[in-house]
Image 1: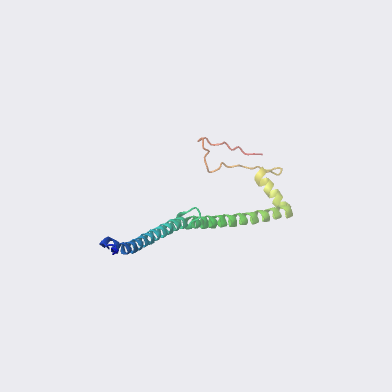
Image 2: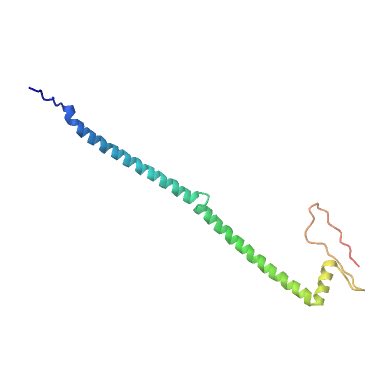
Length: 134
């Protein structure tokens, strides 16, 4: 008579152990995937906030753009003022004479120009002498 193989506790539990091992491996893979996804999310969030093109860089660039816009408006106003001055000089001979007398210290015959010292003292501490120009 053939002898039936003897079933031990070990052979009965082997399928249960395999199923338990698969469940345990699944849980560990699930935990590892969760930790990996969380880590990736933290790294991406850090890059979005503090990276080269992050939110902080964006805020700094917006402030810089506002300052540059203000400078541009000031320069445009100065440019308009200078264009008006040019038009005035081109149209009015009296303005040309006034500018020449102011900048070049030109005089008419019989006039005397007195040049006053500037209110600021030169860096070397000595005051420049200002003699009247004929």
